[in-house]
Length: 229
Image 1 (spheres, rainbow, N blue to C red):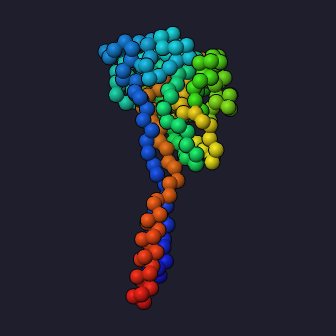
Image 2: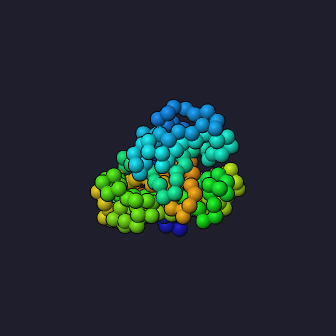
Image 3: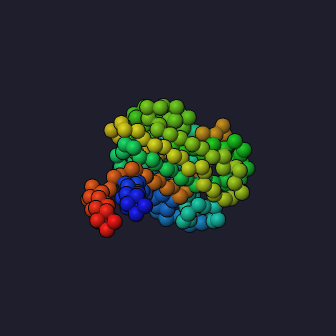
């Protein structure tokens, strides 16, 4: 029994390695127009995020609405069909599970009507986003060569003037992966209205064998137990 226990402990060390992937300005606290006061808004996106039509086209905006926030004080909103993205700078890794968690907001019935589709996704690179000029969020997620996985939440189901987490988007890579960086997508895929986002989080879990020295140590332990017996 002792020998089996030692072996079990040794092989349990060959487990998983979990890590958070850094998102720059995950709660949209810094934008091109500087810090905002309550009630303020700015059409300029933080430089870490890129909009469908660039940084200052007005399709996406950062707002400070007292009490309407997922983290910090500000959040990002966008019009129907609009999308923004951020290149994480992290290469897509094989045999890795990525989990994207996003807070979406219900401004009120006028802006977040029933059927709201606050959409989020993981993309393989962002080169084609600028080159092809996808018409809307639906066109981005329809390109399966670009979009690894996507999900959405009906923010109108949350209490008015509040944010809530959508279901985490979980995607696991295989042994072969695109030679691209992982990109986070946020967009509106509703028939009408707006989407609001905040508190973006991304984690990765990969199976990583521990150093072989652990197995050697386990074998040494087995040898000692046998001698004692």
